[in-house]
Amino acid sequence: MSETVRVFVPQEGLTLTWPQRCARCGSTGKLVESPCRVGRVKSLRPSLLIGLTIRSDVLFLPVPLCKAHATQNELAAEILEHSPVMRLLRVLAYLGAFMAFALVYSSLFNPGGWQRVSNMGWFLLYPTLSVAAIGAIVWARKRFAVWPERFDPDKDVIVVHFSDPTYAREFKYKNHKVTDETLTESPPWYKKSLLWKAVVIIAFLLFMQMLIHR
Image 1 (cartoon, one colour):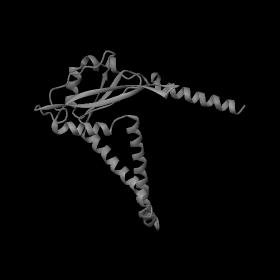
Image 2: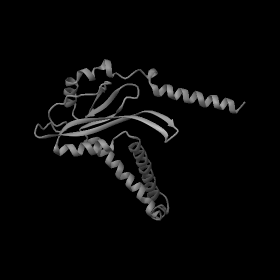
Image 3: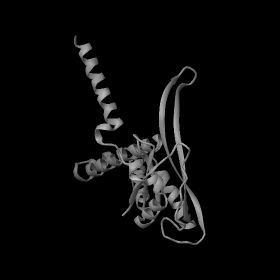
Image 4: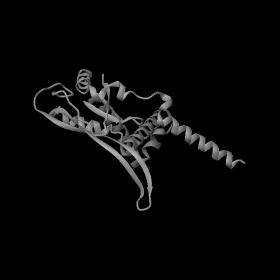
């Protein structure tokens, strides 16, 4: 079972001390640094020249892994990455997998369903690839060693998942200055920025509705 560690990111930069063994299998043989990426969009601003200016932070964590698990961890982390593109691809995969389930159900339990499904031709490629993508997501969740999932939206903190709880606890001990709960603790629900953004949007929509119906 994986364990989650919250890590504070100082303004001057983040320097981490890693246990010198493979984060997946514990091997102390020849280790390589497997870079895992985590990022966030800090601001979106309109621009007269290019339309939109995006400010973002990208952080790379050099995870020590044996050669056998380094490539595997990089691939798993990329599949699970919380970038806008990967999120969109995962949403499309979930929709396609739901469509595949609906097509299978229709072909098995509706009269003439199989004939209608077989007539869809190349369109069947989308739900088929989506099922394969869901399989890749499941594989990635089971095979990652270290997965920096995301930045906390309310603090300069990254959320990192470890497949090995013992390794996670040792990592937390070696980096106690940036994993201390006084720095990394998530704010209470009523202080979360997402909540107040939703409140402002709802209040604006209600206000616009009142203006329209006057």
